[in-house]
Length: 241
View 1 (cartoon, rainbow, N blue to C red):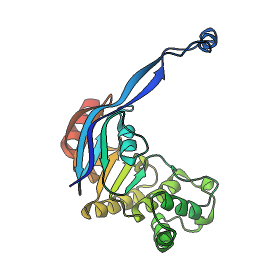
View 2 (cartoon, rainbow, N blue to C red):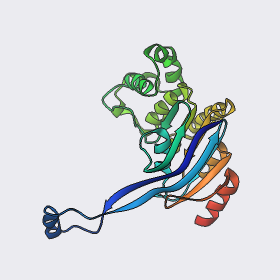
View 3 (cartoon, rainbow, N blue to C red):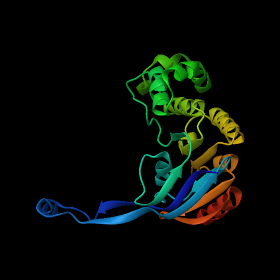
């Protein structure tokens, strides 16, 4: 059974054309601004089943983050369909879903609620989340006092604890110390063995090799190539090397 399926998915955005100097800015106040449409993704087809782990590679602006945001339900396609069967946990931007003025503990409860956990379930999992994050005494401090690595620890710990059917990761594992990165990788391997689906976008090819069995290569919103993770990553490295 498909856990994630994209059918002819396209996503477009509009952008203003050309520079805007003072004169043209004033003129634009009295006439509609010109915009042009560009495709962040164009006619993408993809199917992932239980246990699949997908590496998403490509240069900046290729559409990697757009793909993950569509699967996460944070945006919607302009063409085609995105079908998702299961609970999604997304680590798309460092600190997303967190509030800097709340403590680490308060952010755990907030983020768990956003991922669909009840208060009772959050209470049951709270100590496990804090222990995995290795935040320790800082859990009662405001998030604004945390380093980027500490925020990543907390975000990943919450996402892993909710036992997602689909885990989306966009670069955030590149933040933090290598020991905790390896701890995250071991946890992701456990989720994969339990049949969970992983989609990971990164410029760190070693991480993708460790985590993924399939891959797609995006260029200008289109699927340039797909195949096994090792074959695809090797081809992509050769193209940029």
